[in-house]
Length: 278
Image 1 (spheres, rainbow, N blue to C red):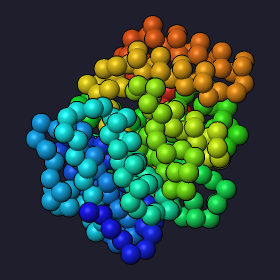
Image 2: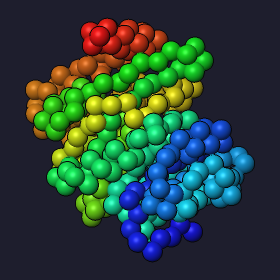
Image 3: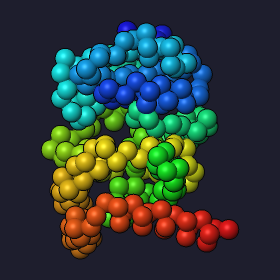
């Protein structure tokens, strides 16, 4: 059981399903005072159940908890199971997200904690990130607007908060206790929008996470379902009628585009941005 005599700086929530090497990579990349943060892993009914001893062997944290689901129920249920445990049993300043296979830059958590500590009006914080295809060693930098006003405008057209970069205040539990479950494969987009409805957000203009591109993962395998859910998120949470129509139109157009085209565009656009910066 994860426990602490004083509030932790943050707790990292990680859903797990049959990816031991990915979990090891993610946990091993976390650099922070081992007594000041916690890890909550939710095993979503893996074929070979994860053991608490395995998690402890991969990470530095002295505060680790494992929730094990008896059968696979999907990532939204796994994430909400983890949040329910955190909010019902633990006290921390912030909650952070990370996925198996994604890795953090050494300075990630120190920078995010420092920013939120010194910006009490910011409720949610993300960062830029790299997306890396390890099969062909291709990589692109995902850049976004960074201040609250530009973020609110940009969210009509894409999710600016890449899930494994996210950190938000624990105290939001009083108003947003779970991931919305009516948006399959876009629960992260819905959560970010829900937090924006309640408070302010910012994004650090540095790549603090390296996200693994997994063509067999949910984002690619259920891409059309994800785009439909994202359209519903924009329709339900957006407040500007004109921008909502534009955002939904963009998502509908994307449904007709092959995934390969979109990925090729992202790689090319990232290279163009880098050249413009140099």
